Amino acid sequence: MHISTASTHTTSTIHQTGSDTGGQANQGMTRLNEGDKQTMLQSRAYSEMLKERTGQHLLLTAHRGTGPTSVFGSSFPDKYLPENTLPAIKAAILEGADAIEIDIFKSGDGKVVVTHDDEIWRNAFQADRSGAQLPEGETKASYLVGQKTVEELKQIPLGHNGESMPTLAEVMELVNDANQTLTQYGKNPIILNIELKDAGAVNEMLDLLADGSDGHASTPLENIVFCSFKHEALKELKDKAEQRGMTGINIAPGIKTADLFGQDNMNPDFSLKDPNAGYHPQAMDNLRKLVEGNGFQGYDGILWDLREPIVDLAVAGNKAIHASTSDFRQYADNRDFSHVLLELSKRVDTFFKCDNVDDARKVLLESSILLNGIGIQMMHKQNAAGEDSFYFYRPSDQQDTSAILQTGANKPIAYSKLGRD
Image (cartoon, rainbow, N blue to C red; front, side, top):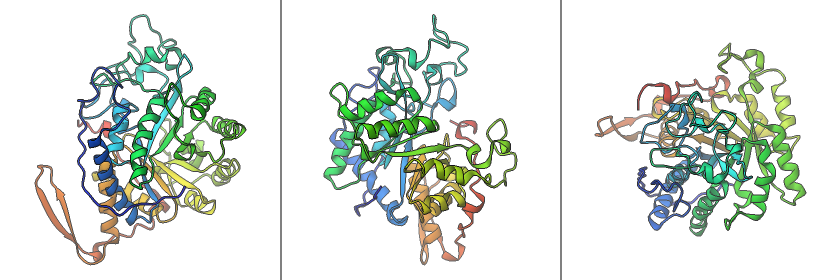
């Protein structure tokens, strides 16, 4: 996947409010107005600055739009937009995201919808996330995406402002609208990163990609990367796509921690029994067979699991790396993630799935300056009180991060568990 950039540098401000979401869920959310387009273009200029400093290899992927919200429990801070909804995806577009990651399932009436979970109670607004208290007349067997029509699903609010579950066709319409403007201004299109959560949705998704739906145009195949931990479903997707003449499909299979370190090294909470453990002896051979053996595009791994051997494997096979995070918004409090990404981007195309594009980009830009600056750098920040502060940085203070891929990054505490809003 070729990456290019422009040299325009402007500034942008993103305001995420509920003013344009309203109780009518997704109405009016699949088009950008002129103000939106200018904001998107200005934000893209920041991303282009980052690419210039990272050899054009680092792309920021908005994780579920503007990050997971289901992790907060029955409700979440009102400053966040509900994950996988059109307002969250639109906000990520306005932040200048290079790619948008979404999750898909098939509804009971055969439509492809965008949601992280089949269990509706995991995402419904103010629902009991354990599923112990369901709406009257519902059971855990009935209150599922796969048991409801799209019309029924759209009646279930997901956020403070009545946001609802979109269809994949609606998301494509929004992304395609943004891409028309980006193409007009010579910018790279937004990549749609579709995570296949429902193995039974392969045929319906391919129908949508081939023919569009309900007047919605499909997104060009070259602007899509598919990923999933359901590897057999990805193989089926590739085979059936090629049978339809849809060649060049981009697929990056999800790599679990156990795939790399071995199931015998895992605790019940998915942490490592030995934090200093290396990869399982057969891990790289297994991954090579999976990715190269099936003609896949790259590897989709958890950022904290990435080490030198998988990078070497990606470089040797000319593959991309997708570095995922989940529920990690405290970018300014932990620089390990930026050191890993800056090292990765020296060698391979790297898609970073982040919870907030704007915040992640700022820390990555600053980290790249601190690590690679020449002479004395003057840095500017705002403190917690919103006051301007300036400081100087000298190259003699630079850190050597070349060993970060030997040890991996330290995983921070999840944002939702920090006890702050």
